Length: 447
Image (cartoon, rainbow, N blue to C red):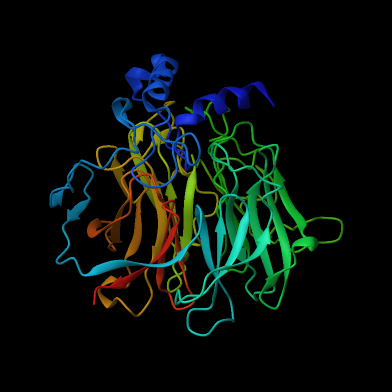
């Protein structure tokens, strides 16, 4: 284990699974004493529901050292426009519910297999410890395990099985995880019927990780048919490994590849990648990410929505429009900026893409990205980006108009604090919420 990894493993015992680990600017010099004090204060104390901080997802701290697994106490934001132009409004009525449809330990990702299972598609759920389950969308049958790599990954710190994606034709499952050394792997498995051929895995891509946190690890096929991968900045804090603005690493970046083996190569580079002809790693599409914890493509417009976890103060959402070609080579800003606020350095690169939406750590402390709703069960939600905050467990809806004005709406829904880890989408565009309270929920209209 590298010295950097050893140091970050120690610190990450109180850091968020999805990477919101940071103190205020004034407290950076005293980070280690604060870590020790927080660990002492929270040792052995379980969250209201779900795993204890020392046995499951690591308990984060929010500003001032308050354990983030304590019940949420901050009120919903007042209606009106905040200092960054965001219009925050209250729900017209609490007409949405989260309906439990499956019980699995630490569910991490949910995807529908293309061309299967009727309206919803066959749904597959990955769990953090390294298993993939076939889930009945109606919840009337228990999930059935179809892949087990729990002996190949370690669900500690911010590691484990982090993402899954099916090829556009549904014939292959791609699994994103960290191996037993803590490095990132993307592995391809062929399908046979509804089952994953676990003994026929092929490693597509491997990335060395210098620390145990900020792995990112979400994967998805875009409307272009290519595999997109989000990697964090390598961990630690303050971009300590200098990855954010480094075009010679796959860390802190959105990656776009053709995962099909090509001769002696495990994957190939799309010819239109911005650095395919030089200037940076050919796999990179965007760079300057801190920890992109869930990204998704709007199934109607093709727009790419990226939720990037902040450090000291700001959580952020980027939208890369399909009409702009997803802004090849765009710089998401880390560590020069956190949200719209200068974090380090003095330069403001021309390729900088500022977020369309931010919220501060008085509202939450670690963003969990979701999907633009395109289902039919909730007409009032169509076209709204549904996302939330891991620490608070609250769900919001976000819209951005043609002038760039962003409006965040309270949906009147939440799960337990420090459990909101992911969202999923079925073949019909209906949304699911994955919580570390060991539950998969479906978002529905109240009856």
